[in-house]
Image 1 (spheres, rainbow, N blue to C red):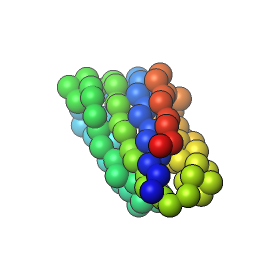
Image 2 (tube, helix red, strand yellow):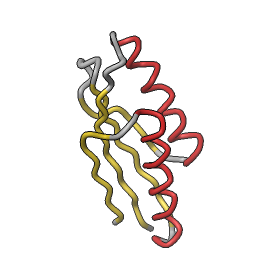
Image 3 (cartoon, one colour):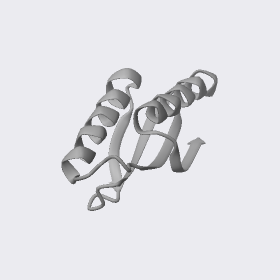
Amino acid sequence: MYLAVAEASFRLPSAGSLKDKRQIRRKLLEGLRGRFGAAAAEVSDQDRHQMLTVAWVLIGAQPSVLRPVLDRSVEWAMSVAGDPVHLEVDLK
């Protein structure tokens, strides 16, 4: 059993309020869960409306299958929220 873990922090200059941030967060988390089967959550910066930090985990039997899915999930997250100011990915 292997784990693929990603954590990304995004700057959201267009978010003028926490409500704007929630819309982006909802799209991002629901997409990671629905498209990639990831366990995903906001893990930091909950009180800052122009920052969003999320983490997600994928589980698989083979790293050769898991790695491309992790890469696609990161690319998709960037297409939703923009380029991250911080990104960590790991396959264990």
